[in-house]
Amino acid sequence: MKLSTRMEAALNEQIALEGNASSIYLAMAAWCETQALAGCAAFFYAQSDEERGHMLKILHYIVEVDGVVKVPALKEPKASYDSIQHVFEQVYEEEKKVTAAIYNLLSISEAENDHATALFLQWYVAEQREEEAQIRTILDKVKLIGTGGQSLFFIDQELDKINATKAATATTAE
Ligand code: FEO
Image (cartoon, rainbow, N blue to C red; front, side):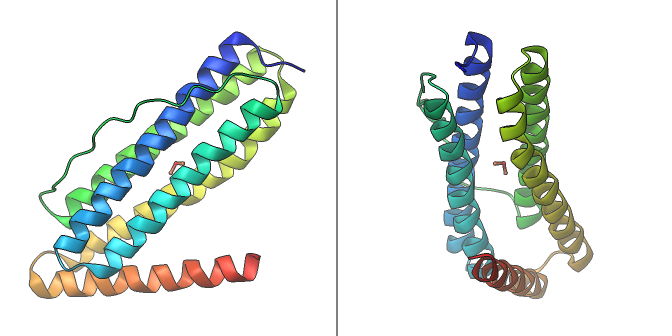
């Protein structure tokens, strides 16, 4: 079944959103690295790759259902941030925006009676639930640990632990 024009346009908008998230996280990774926050940097480099993966998954889906892919120009993300708490607050806002966009896509697929796309989007619904929960947990920890040099050290260690857990989960899932 071919994609409707409305569904195709909405999925292409999602490609842009995921691609922009990938760019934003790449910029955050670079900023963290300049702040000697290696754990945070590793987290964002991996997160940027994940977002690119989300973008590609939609791109391949559009091709599979005989639609036309529009690869967007990316917006230039911010190069610097006030604090690591500020970074995670922005990430949380970004993820909430992505979740809202996925829900909107799902509503469109239902309105268009497009069961294939509705089924395809279920993966994103679950992924967004996990991503939002993860970022909220990190943000809570960042707030709890507080600010200052020593605090940054502990925050970075926490991110290292999260990176290790994610890497172990990915290996188990392979
Ligand atoms: Fe692909 Fe984090 O949204």
